[in-house]
Image (cartoon, rainbow, N blue to C red; front, side, top):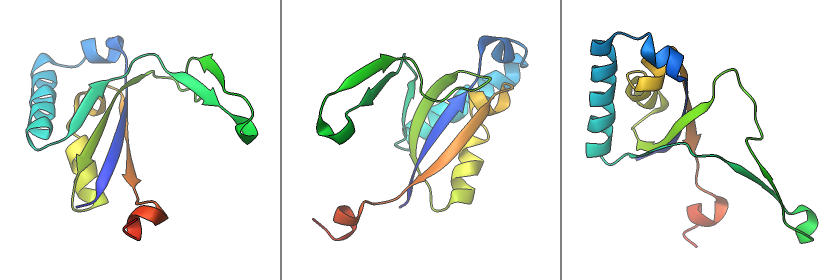
Length: 116
């Protein structure tokens, strides 16, 4: 079954102004996704890693991409199609609490596809 990564963006203000019943149902959706095998987590503070030409590893604290909303969390989900993955993500806390969720298809690398 195809795998997708979701990236949820949201902040406390958006969460707080969302009706409690809507938030509760969104958390129940997270529980259903976990029960179905999704791997989910809250985003910690990122570190950027660069090693240009394999010469020296450099790190910088903080996100590389900037957005109006902070990254709140990630999930790996399995769905039969992008449409199903979108439907699954559309009921999660970031999606319903004035945030946004990106759904990214994960494709096999050429080595994986060849069975290496």
